[in-house]
Amino acid sequence: QVQLVESGGGLVQAGGSLRLSCAASGRTSSSNAMGWFRQAPGKEREFVAAISWSGSSTNYSDSVKGRFTISREYSKNTVYLQMNSLKPEDTAIYYCAASRLISVVTARNRYDYWGQGTQVTVSS
Image (cartoon, rainbow, N blue to C red; front, side):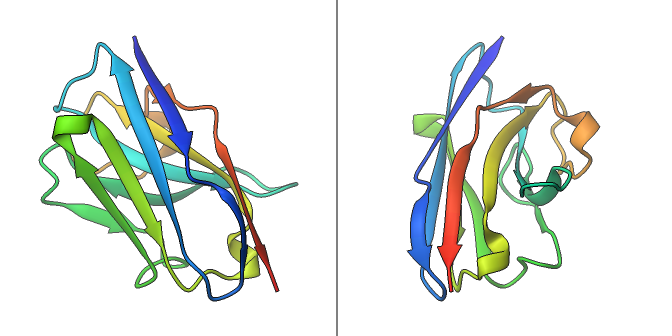
């Protein structure tokens, strides 16, 4: 089992920045693709960003491309999501996920482990 714990959420004004962290523990391995998803009230959970096990490949949803950056730090078993130029429509609970696959994964059902989520609220 792999446990994922997100942190770094909070309240920020539009145009501001936040950095989310996802710390992995348990039977972790660097051979895991990692991803971030988000879920706004009344909406389905949607893909935000993903990174391959090597860190050499990333993928972003069109809505965050150019504003968000996903990265990973192997020594700390941690994945980050740097969010810049935040908009009110970015308001959601953000979830970290780990896949047993090694390549970039964008489909929600290809992820095997999920964190509890961290709230991000962007005020206008």
